[in-house]
Image (cartoon, rainbow, N blue to C red; front, side):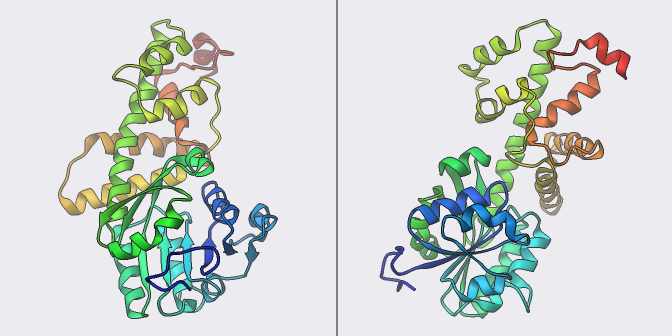
Length: 317
């Protein structure tokens, strides 16, 4: 392991990676391309095959990952998964990490869990950083993610050479503050996605050409990252997940619990969460967040699908 005075580099640093889903696989690949030795764990070995073909080594538990690593990154689905892969006393990463090692959880999770992991790591002579990301699958592939970090600033600074391979890092404060920043990010995205989809529904009903409409508003005050990333996908009926509805519902649920703890009323957040829950109820949880338009189409008994007329939708219903 590199000493605290020695910069991190492939020659002195071994990395571990837990979770190879839509985001994790692309993110880990950038570390491999930079020349780092990476040990990976995922519940299904075949899902790590693309990384193994690039030179990664697969092991059968998070503990085994940590035993061979100086820095262990995790990006999994739910807070319960985070707790299991990091804190499980038998198989968790912390149980296998050497003193001085660093845990970096990039899952969007509970701020209180980030604080718990930080305390447990400190007790074991290790370090922990919560570092959830924003930018979706495209940001993961292009290494242009926004990385929101919480923990000791000196540890985050030390990790910067690794974060720079994934995107741009922002230090938000102590343990859990990275998670709080990501939750605020999700609050903003939720209402922005509602606005994007409602605008499309409105423009469709008004008889506008939707491609021309998106092109027109994208350069004005209505322009947004969500419009750039998802506007064309919605028109193309491309609902493949860059970020799963199921995971977004999880994120918004965490946001609402934190709002309750803070005594905050955020009605836009609550509305967005209900609309996304309706997608889950229709079996659409594995679609991407842009599938929100489907909920609004059903609500208004219309379809933006150019192969269907609104009268045909009414007959089908």
